[in-house]
Every structure is written in structure tokens, then in C-alpha cells.
Image (cartoon, helix red, strand yellow):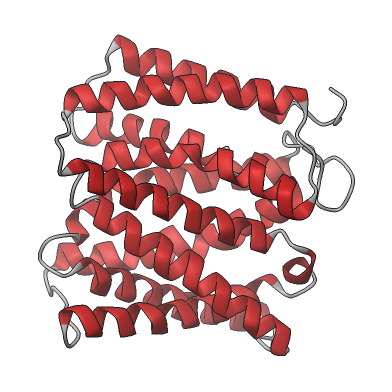
Length: 306
């Protein structure tokens, strides 16, 4: 795929590869933390607290950089829509999905984000799909299928889990819509941090309103583990990562940027090996290898005629 700016963006340059790797590493670790955020507190309130912390973090980051947070009317309209799609619908669906299926299955399914991202970018932004990108995507999807098969064998799913799968796909579509919106001309001509801050503010407002309507007044778990988890997800999992990821979306395009989601479940599995005694199977190894091979093939595609 081509750069949103019209020219090819080289994935292998340090300014692209570095943020890509950092986002994958951090988001790969968040699946271990999210598990502890579900149960003692309604998922909707956990999402609200996460992005309330994140919004404050982005505010402090903007102040430290001396960047203005002002947006025009059109900018605030974009922020409301991004907040609804990315920081409300997406995470409300994801946290609910983990109440029905394992975080491993949710993480692997979310790697399929590259499919709607590429299709929506082609449909709404006119960004071409290269032969190399399509070939790499086919290889990566085969790897994702093997990873998913491994996860299902490890933690078999029943009929009730179909709701979790449905929630996951709803989250994928919400996140993909936000990604394509971020890559649009209207979004790229506005300051990244200002748009991100107001999107989080609107997202928190929507999350809190929904949580209060469904679960009643604010609820929180005062356990140190829960509070530290909120801090980690808010700061590392949101303040550090979303500016980097949305910049990748702007420079690489939604399709290639979504390959970050292909790396995330592999990182999560590696971290689970270190901290949870996760055991790799031949399916998991084959899936991870295919996913990484597909990533390399797809991200080497620059020329639309290739």
C-alpha cells in the first residue's frame, strides 16, 4: 500500500520500525493485565477508569511538549466520532468479549483487523492494495487461523462463547472505522495530540454515561493490583501507544499499520511463556512463523503494481 501522503512509506526506517515494535510489545503485554480488570468491577467502569487516566496523561504530555489542545468545530466532530468508535465501542466490546472467551482468542481474532482496515482504506480513502500486500495478508491469515485453532484446543469454546466472538468482531469493526477515520485528510490536517485528547475525553464521557445507565453509580476496586493495572493500561497501554499507533496509521495507511495486531498475539504468547508457564505447540509455532512471514511479505510491498 502507498503512504497516505501519496508516496511510499518505508516500514524498515527506524522512525517507523521503532514505534511499530514498541506498540506491539506494549499492547502484547496488556492482555495479561486486562484479565485482572474484569470481574470485581463491571467492565464498563474499568474501561472508563482506564481512559480517564489516559486522558489526563495525554493532557500532561501536551503540556510538557507545549502543544495546543485547541480544535476547530470540525476537529471536535471528528474527536466525538473517534471517541465513540475507538475509546467507547471498541473497548466496551473487547472487555465484554473476555468475559466469554479467553484473552488469547480475543488477541488472535483481533489480528484480523488488517482485513477491514485494508478494505475500508481502499473503499473510503482510495488507497490501493498491492499484490505483495494481498499475498502477505493471505499468509498471515493462515498463521492467524493456526494460532486460533491452538487457542481453541487449549481452551475449548462452547455455545456461550459465540457471544464473545461476536463482541470481538464488533470491536474489530469499531477499531477499524476509527483507524480509517484517523487516516483521513480531515484528521491528518489536525494536531495529533489535540485530536487524541478530545477523543479520549469524549470517549470517557460516553463510557461513564453507559456504565452509569447499565450498572449504576461509579464502582472501583481498591486492590493495589487493580489500581496498578488501571495505571499501566492508562499510561503505557494508551498514552504511550495511541499517539505512536495513530501516527503509523497516518504514515503507513490503515492496512499496513494493522499488521501491528498480527505481532501482538505472538508477543502476548512470548510474555505468557515467561510469566505464566505457557507451553508452545506445533500449531502455535507454525502459526507464529506464518504470521511473521506474512508481515514481512506484506510490508515489503510498496509499488501498487507489485
